[in-house]
Length: 221
Image 1 (cartoon, rainbow, N blue to C red):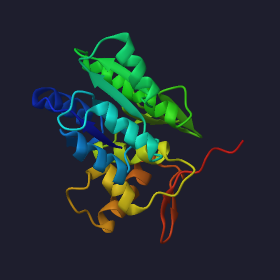
Image 2: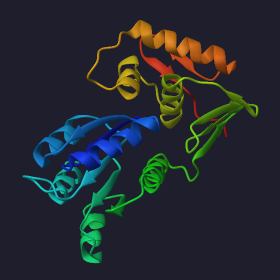
Image 3: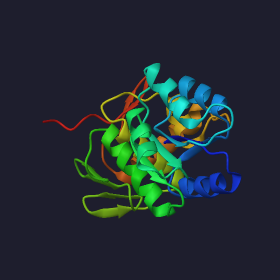
């Protein structure tokens, strides 16, 4: 899943990006308010991690503009501003969660998983669809209780399709959410990756909609 990280402190941004990539996310970074607003307003992200103390347009103004334009992307605020009134301002402006600095990386990842679950209407980090179980916290997939050894890319495909279950995902969207937008990846590579994932799972879960993309249907009932 693609995440936009907006942080002007290079050290913090680099540390957070490393943790996000290790947790299976594709990360885009911005350090200035205006650029962050434009990117969040014109591109689709699973979530945005937003610092408030940005040069130019501050994070609160960026968030208000996103919400005013109808952008509902989950937003997790990171900031050194610790007063309760500033936290209230952030939540009232449309933030989904608030994490003051300094913070532990494990808590950031847990809060990010939480806002993603809420945006998808789920309460648990463990998702079961038929015989398949995905544990987002441990980044593990199992079928009928048997762990499946997936590569990082295969896991990203599985996690993204499950997160988007019930909706057809195009090859372009899937590529952007497992590779990012900086590098071009052709459709044949995605087909090979999905085919390899199907063989490893050994179950008919991922459907192909020719000319449209891939789908994991919502469980019946």
